[in-house]
Image (cartoon, rainbow, N blue to C red):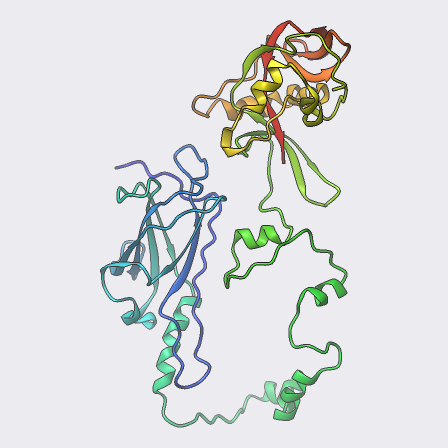
Length: 373
């Protein structure tokens, strides 16, 4: 049996159907589907076409496929694919002829993360009540009205039994709020403060929309493979969101500066600012040239950021040990920080004994880039 790779760390499966609002209306013959695609190394497959085969199975997870189609969607920068089942290339069956009342039904997804038809990722899950709203189309066939006299004594004794048509009309003429929907003004009136956001003009709520509202997706953890490297430090920022530091998966060796000049890169806590000040620096040139994970904001960590990396080396190395081509953090080497000490010296950190000291800038030591998020 082929090895089945993990399709999701988090799966957002949305199956949408809408009931007709009048006798002649029809529910749409499509279902929305979203999923986050990861490869065999658990890395997100981002901004890449993937091949998918989707099957509607009747009766059980191994039931008869009443409908099969293929699609080739493209993942976004978060590894998310968004498709409409019923809009793909039909392999067999007719989507709009499925009798949803004759369930249960299951959806089977087969994915080729390279965009072909060699499907190495498989998942099956049951379709719950929402898709069966498509069966509401049968209401179009009802001739005449429906008249029911409520005889339940419990209902008759409740407040709800006294609601009239006038009452329901007054619901749209309330005095608490002058509009008919909850919008950003209404949310602000409740005391909530939204983060920085942008306007989205499409008709579907996806992960990008959620991020645009200022929310951080998921909860990160130490040792998580993320942002082109491995998370080794986490904290909650003043914006209320989770932030952290990411260490690169590989390293190099270099001098701090090829000629002794003062740079004023003296921050003990801010390696990003320090790196921008470093001149005639082979170490800075190395980290500035990195594009791992598609990111170009790598920098040489400050002495404090190196101290945090040393203290959390357990989490970093545990994650790096299972990443192909990654280099473990040393237990014997010394690493340059971006914190300058004097005109001729800068601070570095002993990963053998766990403390920092100063050294001549022309000394060749290990270089490990980091970035923040």
